[in-house]
Length: 233
Ligand code: BV8
Image 1 (cartoon, rainbow, N blue to C red):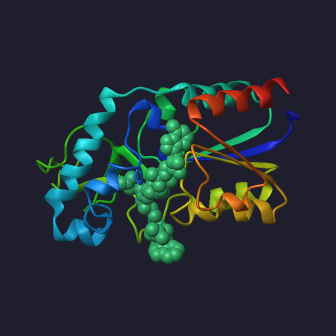
Image 2 (cartoon, rainbow, N blue to C red):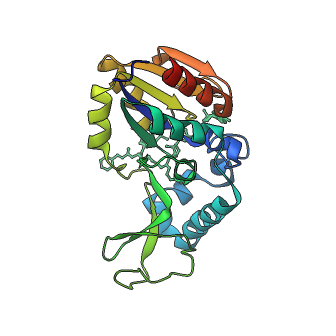
């Protein structure tokens, strides 16, 4: 691909699957063990904060036991070597893109390793449990919540994402089922802007028919292959 192009990449839980992190919709996945409305909505949090804080504490703790896979490393290589513009947007709240070497990552649904204080509104880097109601590092109030975007909440940096989609030459979706909006609608924004669109996923996603090209298989194989094509041409 010409090195003056603009690429937007969206990743989902499938890019972390080979690292051992449960996806949401696979058999035995995260949402099978819990009802979405109980652990990933503001209402669920208000109803049972201990359940929700415990759910995210477990997922945060699990991060130390997993590591980035070749798909994460390939996207980090792309960031280092691609001479055009690249925006990496992830729906994932894990830190595997960063640990895989990517330095510019837009977490549109927040991060497990960030805490949001419901009293002062400040976000702080966080790598400890919240179930024991620790004090906010800034205002000391015991009112920290996971800094993740729940259903019914507005994802982060949407303006920046839509601006990038309307100006990109290529939109690539990696490891996502295309089940959750607004992320699932990004491919249509990119198409409307005249971009090429590529899906790299284990199996056809809910939105696979929107993509000009789709390749199906494990991200650990497909992503390094695709990055080679972009960099080597
Ligand atoms: C909002 C963070 C408005 C927390 C998440 C009806 C129609 C349309 C929309 C709606 C509707 N009703 C409600 C809505 C809105 C709702 C929505 O889309 N609901 C869906 C269920 C219909 N969306 C929202 O609420 C969003 N906010 O709309 O706000 C608004 C407007 C103004 C003001 C205020 C508000 C917010 C949604 C964000 C929710 N938070 N995560 C957490 O992580 O706990 S969602 C979560 O699930 C993920 O972040 C991700 O976004 C989403 C989908 O998961 P995926 O990443 O795709 O994972 P999944 O398991 O589904 O799929 C994995 C894929 O990988 C599979 O395809 C599989 O084949 C593949 N795979 C597996 N292994 C591999 C692989 N691929 C490659 N290699 C492998 N090895």
